[in-house]
Image (cartoon, rainbow, N blue to C red; front, side, top):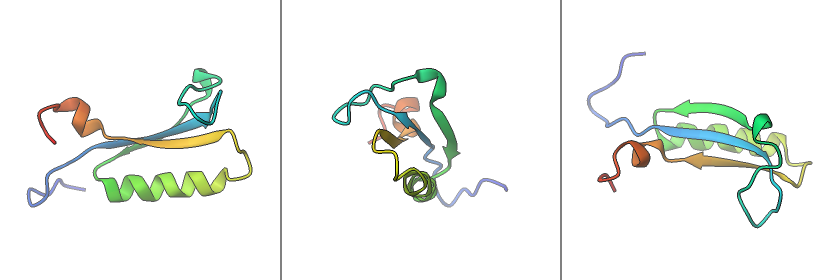
Length: 78
C-alpha cells in the first residue's frame, strides 16, 4: 500500500506481556513479550491493542501498550 502524502505517518508499536506488578510496566519475562506490530497511525494501533487486550482478558497480569514511535524518532514533534 503506497504512502499517502495527505496525512503524515505517525508510527505506533503495540506490544504486551505478563507484568510483575499491575501498577508498573516491568514484564515478568522480556523474552516472552508479544510484539503485535508497528502501525502507521494511532487508530490502527488502537484497534490492534483492543483486540489483543480483549483476547487476553482472562489473564489479569497480561497488559498491552501502545508506544508512540513517532515521538521517539522525532522528539521535537509534539
